[in-house]
Length: 132
Image 1 (cartoon, one colour):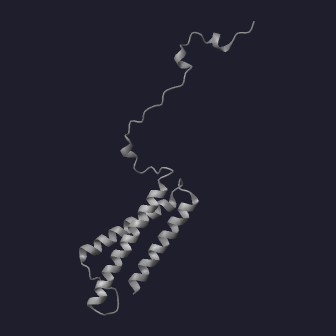
Image 2 (cartoon, one colour):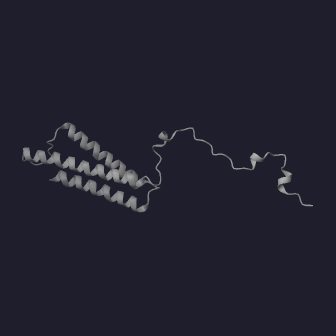
Image 3 (tube, helix red, strand yellow):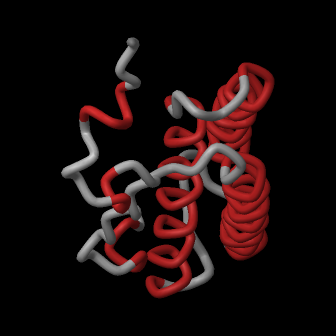
């Protein structure tokens, strides 16, 4: 007579054979802000590009207002100190977001390549605007 495995383990309760419940993570989702999700590359890439375009517009307007006031060689900023700090902040935020997408393992190759291209074009445009 063959003994089935179930009869040999009959002293165990039936709950041990079922699926085990998932263990709850004690950390709420707000603490997972550094975790990159697979589909978050697209919105981050879009936000990084939008912030970069805004920073380039702010940089161009600040340099243009200085060129209208005085005609001299070198870099002149004519929009004020607070506008210059805001431009630097926007530029740094855009660079950090684009760099994060370009280094993300979960982003697709196309998104990473596009983020690198956007980052290089942002830096090139800044150099061009500053050289005018």
